[in-house]
Length: 84
Image 1 (cartoon, rainbow, N blue to C red):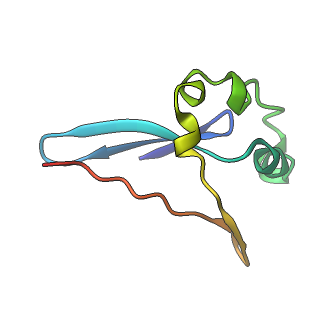
Image 2 (cartoon, rainbow, N blue to C red):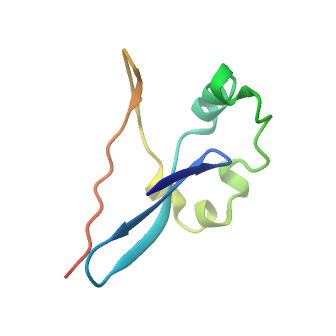
Image 3 (tube, rainbow, N blue to C red):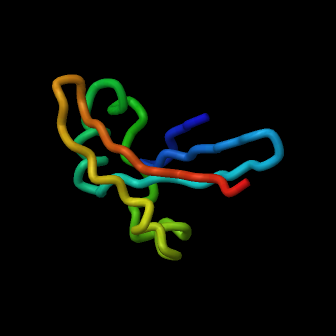
């Protein structure tokens, strides 16, 4: 499950007996560019930038994605594992 809120992408990973919830970040400048696109522009400017986000302040820079531009937009990978 993934949802977008204020430039961060919240996600949840589940298996048979575990659940992990966190969020991923994009650089503020990239988020500003994305938010200016017609798909998101109607939402207005986001209210929280990375530096003001409490989770980002507590090690969130480890969750900062470095996407590359593709012919369909942007792509990034981030490995997540749950220990059994």
